Image (cartoon, rainbow, N blue to C red; front, top):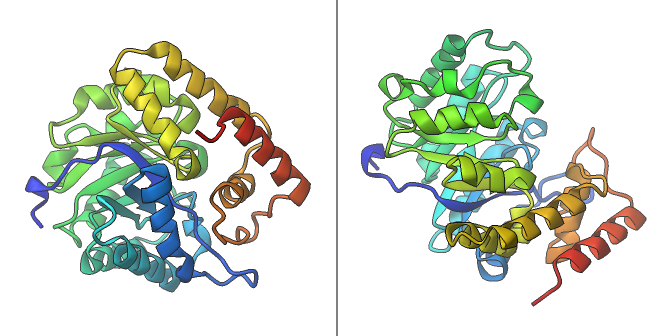
Length: 303
């Protein structure tokens, strides 16, 4: 595939959870039903695999490869776009996962900044991204900006300005930050073949107003159909409907949200056997998960 003629990503992209067995091993057998749930129940046909929601930094290299392979296999003919996050603390590991994603037929790769030995400048981070992109030159390349998790004090706009000259396969940004001024500068610098995807679910309306063409989020796993309605309402200029959906999302998140709670809510809503998160993350207590599921159904009743 020539990245110059690849398809842009737009709309809703579900950041997928990693299914585990009760004993802590990955459970790839759930991915087939997971794909069907997303496409048939939520109307979501784009996924972001092995990202923050997927607990990628808690997975081994082999586990990440297996998960990416199964998602590609089970999603073939059902999913429109499958982006694999390949970022690691090690450049060599990141490059290995990038090559693997290209080999298995992923539609794109995304890379987060290393966060132990941190790049001190935008140029250092850009060089790191370049070294990853060059080993998988046929894949659309996305920078994954999530400063709250990486602790990287580098504006995304300084990373993406002129980056198409450095990385010919660069195709956009997953912006999971709350600095809308920084995101707005990225929109200003965007090229026609880029996809600007907002990654803070509860602030999606603001992201759309600033120029986001789509969104990547964990809540879209079980709120995908509602979020699609929000985007449709935004395009139609129905801000009242947009605000209503966003307020419901915020009320849900205010119940005490973390990845363990989020994953358990997905289990409650979808019925999929996704298992607990991996330590050091803790599983959501049963009474808490039931209360949050009740809150969800009160905010988003079944049609």
